[in-house]
Length: 125
Image (cartoon, rainbow, N blue to C red; front, side):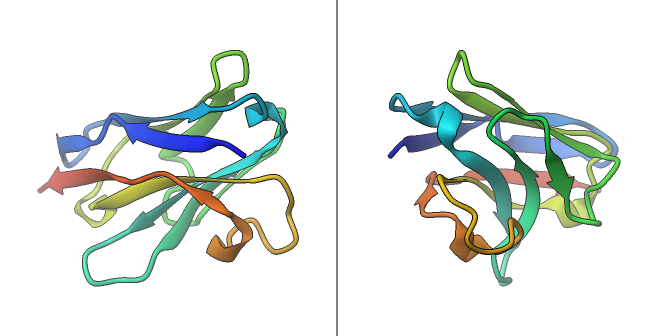
């Protein structure tokens, strides 16, 4: 198992950029599928992006496709989410998540069994 800690959240203007990081402890990070989710105020937690063990496969929600980029560095036990052209509707708490198996869809939050504590992203219009 791994433990996850997010960082990099904050306030950005619409059209601006932020880069979120997720740092994992433990020796098995490279054997975990990883994802980013977010929870807007008053709403359910929703899928943002997914990356496979090697980083060779990624997927995104339609709402962020073309604006956000997920990446990972297994040598440093880190995963990142580069967020460009931010919109007010991107405001949310962002969580990184990990799983060693993919019994469900990568977009399903119940696929992941390890979560970080979350980092707040606010976008002003």
